[in-house]
Length: 160
Image (cartoon, rainbow, N blue to C red; front, side, top):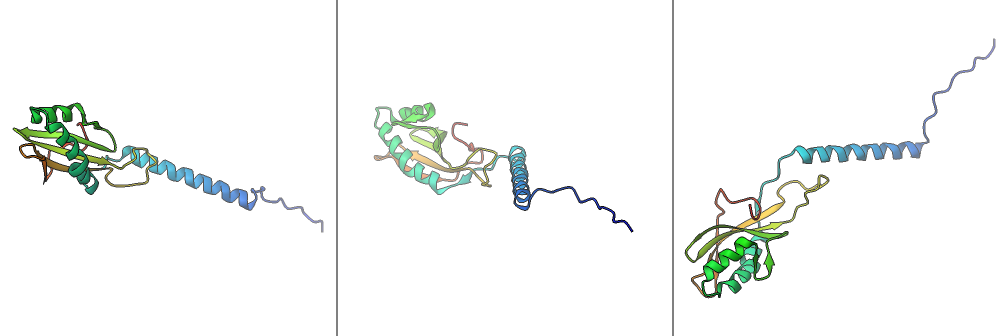
């Protein structure tokens, strides 16, 4: 009986090459899933935070105190905070603030610390910004900061 020649299966890439291609395709799929999830997901809420509190109690308090020595301290502080620059400190990432209200010589401010990365490939989940609210009493010398609960309508980010 004559021997029949069997056809061999189509050639596959060598083992290491096939594994490399599988790993690359898997990583590409993972990146695509993360990117799509970040694009359609809701922005994370703000978190009451120690770093924002430290900024409110030290850096921002020092800046406010240096402006409060002006003849009309409360107006000068409010104007400087609203303009976004006070005592050389600018309202920009990672630290920032929003003026919440003013009653005479007492100004309430939300201080922020931003630690997040807005890129779609950010693997961190959860809040990307911390917030702490303070009442700055300009009637005293030195200016005193009192911790307060942030009102429900406090902005989630500086200047908003």
